[in-house]
Length: 506
Image (cartoon, rainbow, N blue to C red; front, side):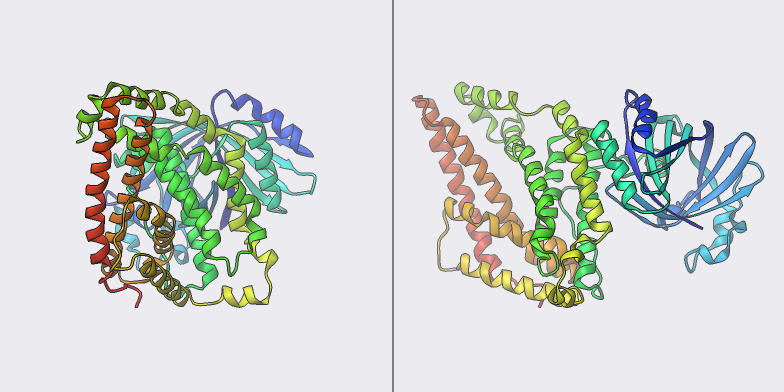
């Protein structure tokens, strides 16, 4: 068995010819291997039994020699792929999984049924160039460049990938070479394998953006440190998934999901401050702040787009005020374009940040600044930490939203940071408690938070009307104020009702 530890990069056709020169710049020695044409077929049952177990079965043929490969469930974070892999030679291109050691399979797997029902699902055919390089530190790295396509039925997508795998030596040299690539090429870290792409095509299930952040999957047996690792891994993958969604189909709501994921990463550093010293994440937090700034326009852009949509109730009123409509159009004209966003996700600073987050997680960098107090905190049961945190949040929230006090727009706008942090705590640790109880408790508070976002936009639109000395815009201001008052009335009902809900962690 081999366990792959490799970084995957996506690169353009223009960057492919530059790769050999970059290898020569970085490496102490470079051994150029022969170029190969590889024909690969991926197999599964019609019901996707292997896919459901996160197992990949592939045959690969080159120059009349074939092998079969099993890849078991592994981990992918920030472009770093780690999966147990088993390879065996076979005659012809048809797999025979009975040849693999029986101990590798998950318990309860019906080998006979799966073997009898295997069929080809999709193929990947590409030209492979390979180099073995030795670093100045003596590590051995394998660098592989694949150019070709993945095909399922009558559909196909291009393959243009560079993979860097540690063969022997210090893992830090993989990251050093990755830094070298990122600084010289407009590459992106690749989250999805060729197999994942092929399955999506074969099953006609394109990558779709999430409607919102979900809940980090945790076990009640997890320690606080394990919860940190799960949360950070989830958040990094969430960002990368929506980066790819944006390249597949550029949408503002997809950028908003990226914004959510980046905010979650920054929140995780605060949430686990018992075991993550502030000094350990200073650079990462600085870069996350930069990235949030690059995307800070997205929320207003989404609201402006919604309000100027012909399907929205506000459209007619806004469109009947040419001055306001023109101001909104001017604002939309100066928003970053799709090309601007794609350039951002190709830039060295963004990809260095993803690489640094991946390394921080993989190498557990937070341990370097640990004292005895942090060591003890790391072993705390996360379910106890979560219950105490939620109770503290709840008591603070109740003090801020007392039932006998009336709230206005400004009160709700000031509540936003605390409410957002409370909801993010739930995203990180809420899976430890009953799903339905959690839903009942969180839903009205989420409704209030979405109301706060709408109040922000109404306030923004009012600001756009100010200072023009136009009678019609003054009327629009009054109308927007009225809409805000109606919204606050609805939010007040949710707030009062929410205070009676039973906390789901008790």
